[in-house]
Image (cartoon, rainbow, N blue to C red; front, side):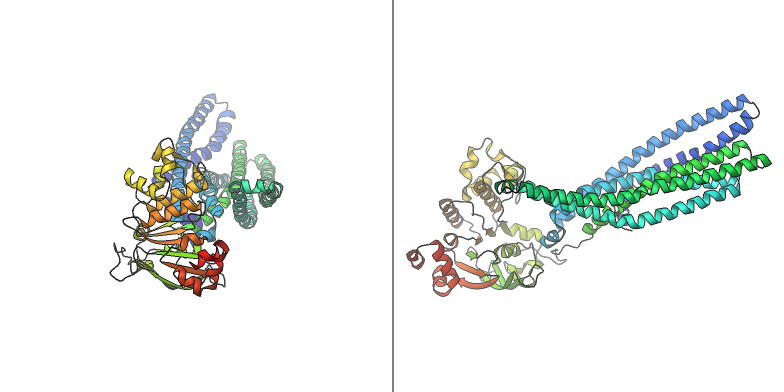
Length: 582
């Protein structure tokens, strides 16, 4: 059913080509079914009567059928390739677009390795199934059924042998398929595991080598590969039963036909040509069954892959735009905060909340510093600001509007974020900086680079703004990548900017210049600075102290030093006592 759902969704643009391809295959099948009858007539009316002229004419007819049949086969093969590749491309594009629509929670649930496998391997399996469906699904079952019908038209009693063989083979198919489908699904899931391990090792190769864990990681990969191989072998053993079993049944049928046919020839109720035709039809059924056995494996894999694809396509994003979503106002009304949290709580799915009852309000242009220990919920708060997740409880407002009622494109334009991990895509510095505003001018890009303290090293690059960026930004240092991502977030003049430990790779002097530059902007954004450094947040208008997801304090540096033991302890771990109290 899942494969049918996939076809109903993606086949319509290619329906005509699929129909023409199917018709071409039907014509080819008809020619193949006529061949044994023509051969039988050559034997009975030509060879037996020594009529060479009839033999030549019928031989020429066989050649003509073969040539014309080849032409129809060529057209069918071409159309099958066009339909399968076209549908595969559309499915892959739709799947990729859907992944882009999914919320962070949805991506966490599926996992990156699984999504990569679905976009690549699963789509390929479906493509093969579609192509084989047009090319072979019509041919071989039609030949098998047509051969049985034609054989019965020659002799009903001998035709019953074919029918018994067909029923026996259908039973073998059902037994094998019912046990193979769950295993094929398991294979795809285990491919996800292999992909995950490979991805982890490729991304963390330096760490693996630094700790001498190559052998351990090799064992992990080998173990996952062997597990997948064992399942594949189990499926292979089941599939291997198809051909021997079907060939045994069909060959026993041929023996029965030859034995019974010889008796009927002696009795004069059958001719030699009819027996030969009968054996040819039996052979066609035998070959057809063999191909159908292979098709069973292809379609079983395709069905398992289609299920995984539709699972993603049918997922309703956890974070979705409301039907009555509105544009965020260009600026908050007088007296309205630019960003506010009202008793916001969030849980990732576990029993303990990552954030619990967090509240604060920032006026336009104000800065909120957020500090706390590892796992205190700082990055979770950052993700909530940009609505990567929706809060479990409470309301988050930007310019006075609940962000769940705001258009996502309007929210993304108003609120910009710099994540902990600097992410750059292959291209150029210009292409990476222009994500928020594609038509940004060079002056705007250079201004953002200057504010992010990245102007100097970009000017030193050959090509400047058009200098190449390799995948992941590996041709830049960690600090350079962070400054480029900060510059990217500043392009387009966002009203709210969230810096999630975005300066962790910067030295203290550069970090200080960055914070000063942000404050000096003429259109100073409302800023949320998340950091482990006291120096990065102590000058903020407000400082939020988080402890295991709970608010441990909210106020200015001086207020928190006096009233919040956790904040004072953090300060004393990084600053001298006189610096803390001054």
